[in-house]
Image 1 (cartoon, rainbow, N blue to C red):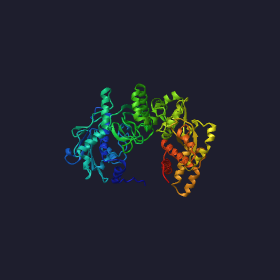
Image 2 (image 1 turned 90 degrees about the horizontal axis):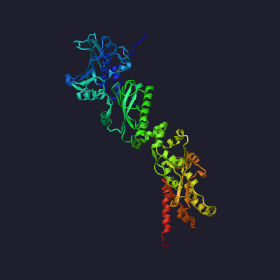
Image 3 (image 1 turned 180 degrees about the vertical axis):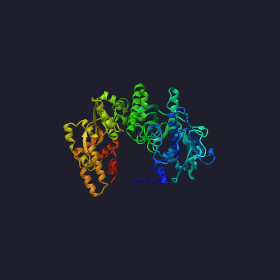
Image 4 (image 1 turned 45 degrees about the horizontal axis):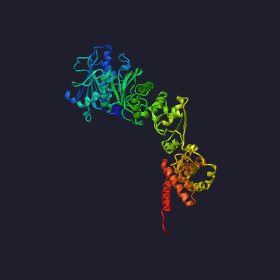
Amino acid sequence: MDRTFQVDLRGVVDLLSHHLYASPRVYVRELLQNAVDAITARRSADPDAPARVRFEPPDLTGDGTLRVSDSGVGLTEAQVHQFLATIGRSSKRDDFGFARHDFLGQFGIGLLSCFLVADEIRVLTRAEGSPTVLWRGFADGRYSVAPADAERSEVGTTVTLVPRRDAEQWLLRRTVVELAELYGSLLPVTVEVGDLPVTGAGLPWQGTGEARRQRLRSYCQELFGFVPFDVVDLSVPAAGLTGVAFVLPTPANPAARAGHRAYLKRMLLAEGAEGVLPDWAFFARCVIDTTELRPTASREALYEDQLLDDTREALGDQLRGWLVRLAGRDSRRLLEFLDIHHLGVKALALHDDEMLRLVERWWPMETNNGRMTLADFRAQHGLVRYTAQVDEFRQIGAVAAAQGMPVVNAGYTYDTQLIERLPVVEPGALIERVEPSDLSTHFDALEPAVELAKRPFLARAQRAVDRLGCEVVLRSYDPAAMPAMYLVNRSAAFAAELRATRERVDEVWADVLDALARTDDQDRPQLVLNYRNPLVRRITELADDDLVRLSVEGLYGQALLLGHHPLRPADAALLNSSFLGLLNKAVAHED
């Protein structure tokens, strides 16, 4: 024999309060939703029917209850049994002969939210041509349906809430006014709390001209707390969506999830809806109203489906179009925007060809010849040489410039990826990643006779730094004022990091890391001494082995500091000992 499920209403209410709804305040939204849907159903058949919802808080009712009356379609006794006593059964699912998407509610659990603040709910309702019916529901799961003691004079419904002992504050006038304005201020029906109207403003983005612009600026400041850099109109007909995006006047955190204000059929859905705009558009906050996007069961977020994906893409296209138009009509304004929100634009340019062209043309990057756009850099130098890390650029920028080698600092967020993607959209673009060790190939080798003569010095210098894992090289390069450079390629840096880690792990892992860290001499960091520097030339002529060692150690330490390299404990100790050793050699003393 088939049996029906038994539902513990107290358990369901507990589930709603702890896992579905974020706060008991949603009861006002659900009452508004039911009232507006009832009005929508009635006006679909009778366009001239009144459209009014009235809240009467306890200070007006005088009996401690909250009453909400609407001029909607009302229910017959059979519909009361059918809808008000069945969880998950919505009266909007074509039961009145109208399309479901015309209504706000879809899940058949809205009235249950009132049990978050009430122990008893009374529904007094009258449909056209039917007697008035009274439904009474209790938080323990009981309900009753009976003819009302007195007939309603008009078609519609009145919901009365008898508050729970610990929830009276949710029914107070100031709370009801605040929540009714929050959820229902844009509704196309008259909503009142007592005699105070809370609707009638209309959609803020309606209208044209300067008055609209000023209104939206004030609206944004009131809503989000900032005066927008600009306002972008949004429209996606497939989603029944209209709205505006407000561009932030200050930098935003790309990692933070942006919250947007979303309305569904002009009822507030969420104050901090996520996923409305693409992730790269973190520089904007939007307010939208939609008729076709679906809400989640809690009605506090948008349901992730294909329509929302398509809508998000369409809104991204509109923001991208705004940027392109801005570049075409007001380059100064575009540069102001890029100065604030370049990260968002560069994030978009990673997968959007048009935005990559915009970045190449307008966004100035750091180079060793000054800041300039990639387009200007390509026009002047042809080949785009770049470093992938800021520290690498600091190490070689000045010396590369002295060798006539222009380099772009692509160590900032997204810059390397954008440069490496440039040939995809510009087939003629030439790019080359530069590592510090590559710079040595642009230095001048010594004359063969000089190089042969300096071999003994190089051997002594190598012994001085062997324990530090680097190779000493003697070259000539500009500027002559720089005595030494410390150059590291990626494989050498990786090996050095492994060796540093080896010192902090146990013996088993140390053996593994030691094997990984073994590199050939060509992968070792290089201490490149500059033979054009007068001090270096004098050091190469020293006969005192101890003085050579101290001098080379001192040049090694200075090269680390000038190149912004991290100092290991061994490096710091060497700097100290070489400095004191040179002082000791320099200061005369008596035996």
